[in-house]
Amino acid sequence: MRIEEDLKLGFSDVLFRPKRSTLNSRSQVELGREFVFKHSARRWAGVPIIAANMDTVATFAMARALARHQILTAVHKHYSVAEWQAFVQAQTADVLQHVIVSSGTSDKDFEKLQQILALSDELGFICIDVANGYSEHFTSFVSKARRQWPGHTIIAGNVVTGEMVEELILSGADIVKVGIGPGSVCTTRVKTGVGYPQLSAIIECADAAHGLGGQIIGDGGCTCPGDVSKAFGGGADFVMLGGMLAAHEECGGELVERDGKTFMKFYGMSSASAMDKHAGGVARYRAAEGKTVELAYRGPVEDTIQDILGGVRSTCTYVGAQRLKELTKRTTFIRVREQENNVYGKE
Ligand code: 5GP
Image (cartoon, rainbow, N blue to C red; front, top):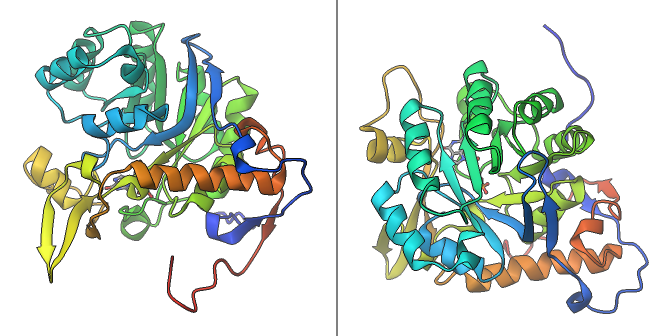
């Protein structure tokens, strides 16, 4: 047994230190970024926020709404090929360029991925997603996908440590998804005791990925626009959001009326709700590692997006970053024991 003594940080352990700047207004801040990915050599330009591949969030309707802001959606893996076909036919290239096709790692997943990607050359992103990215099977699946699709941008995850980020990039991933346990409907830390505070995971994994010309996604744990900024400030190239985008009209989740109020169901992809829906129940050998919650219904996602983008722009003005790309260089985090003042309740 070994203990690592240095303290790892989550978003709630830090705040940005403001810096003098010449920026006068948030409107001067550019949130768009442009990447040319290491293996695929594809160029992508847009706002590097991604709707998480959860069936209660990353729907086709969400992809259409977010594409208007050049934001990506990792469409969940439970649509049929026929549904994909209908979606792809009805979209402009502009929408499809902001769509990511999610997959698991079984032979069936591989076959389905082949059929979906064959529908359009504009579908340039693949997200190979497992709860635990540390298995050899996962790395070999990533290599197999890289051989099959040399010109597609491959996202692989989830992991939280630099050596595994390097291994996945060397196996063919362009972008590594980082986060184990921070998610809003995740119970991995309770069920297994495994995890890594998300800000430290981002800082350490970004360093490893950038050293090899790869990128990372900070996935999970953002509860407010300030957390999204902290993820970017820590070095995340992309930030993935589940809960912050849940319970909107575009999510298409089940609506529940109670005491005259409307709620929408939101659940983790390893929750009993998800396994009942997609896998015929929780298998006997495993425990559910996700929960189900009911959130106040929030209407169209547009206002939430404005709120998030406005918050990140404002962070950039506080630290003098004219472009999102510069935010991490302009970031000094101070370690704190307080966040917002909750005397009148939470925002
Ligand atoms: P959030 O933005 O809601 O904090 O986190 C979203 C992320 O939580 C997802 O992108 C995914 O990585 C993770 N996640 C989603 N469902 C589950 C689940 O059932 N269990 C666990 N452990 N993580 C989940």
